[in-house]
Length: 144
Image 1: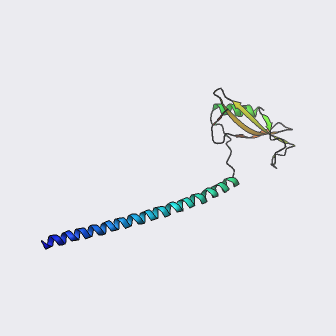
Image 2: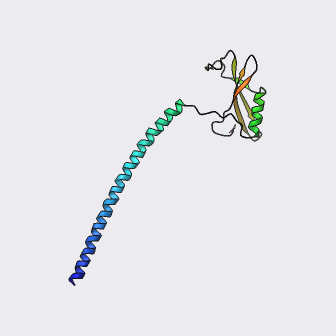
Image 3: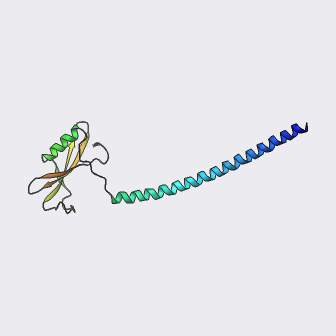
């Protein structure tokens, strides 16, 4: 009988130690989770501010190739001279001096209500057109 009592006490003690170890591990895990989340939060704040400052420094590469037939037709219209002058008196690009070049914008409205917006440069003296860029801000087309 003493052996059974001793065995029972050993099971209780082992269980108590296991429970205490589990509880301690749980507490340590919670502490570490909070610390990791705090670190991630601080890292996200740091990275987002770094990304914002780097986005301000580097411009997004413009899209110059049409992605569908409607954009191809809009590009062909612009190459033929469709469009209106924009930013007159506000050009500050040494490659395109305002007395020689004008910034043009051609907006083609599609039957489905979308539109394609294209910017380009036109030489005032020769009529040469170049620098065609689709201005869709990440979208294929925009709606009115």
